[in-house]
Amino acid sequence: MRLVIASNNVKKRKEIASILGALGIEIVAPEDTTLVDVEENADSFADNAKLKADAFAEANQCAALADDSGLCVDALNGAPGVYSSRYAGANASDADNNKKLLRDLQGKENRHAHFACALHLSLPDGRALTAEGRVEGVIRRSPEGHGGFGYDPLFFCPELGKVFAETSAEEKASVSHRGRALRMLAGKLASLD
Image (cartoon, rainbow, N blue to C red; front, top):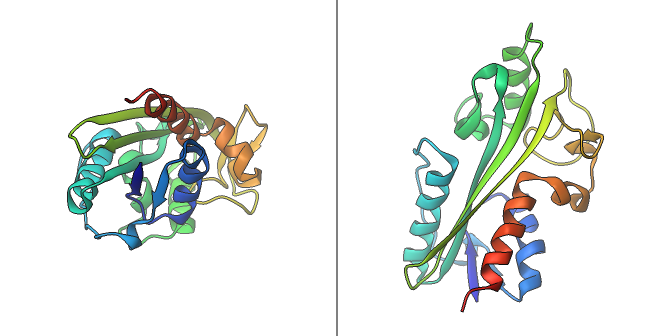
């Protein structure tokens, strides 16, 4: 199967390829396809993933996989949520988003959060496969570690005993929201006829 990954995030694509590539799936980067500009204007991760996957599948006449994921913080009523990548503004950097998150959490004792990931795979024959993953954690009071991306320097994962920015790619994928969703999707793909 030829599969377009509908994401410009190279680190996300690498994580996806490491799990789905083991199934013998040919992973294609969006820059090697017909590019589609998709406005992520849905209210849920699942709906945003569907918008992207459907658009790339139609434009390229092949299977397309999209994910939408983000950080949901209890004390902020689930924010940043679907706005995670643009929490501090449309052109915000990861550092900008992290600074805004820490400002918004000032004075709040409840630091519980979770990462959520929704995957949507649109197949050329009109079928679709979906999967979701989630990992629980706590937001640190200042950034730690030097790896990862996004909110990884602030997200402490109790299962690993450290922030995501201190983990190897393999460690993170073993418990991450995207890793869990990808393993679920891989199981569904393996049973396709």
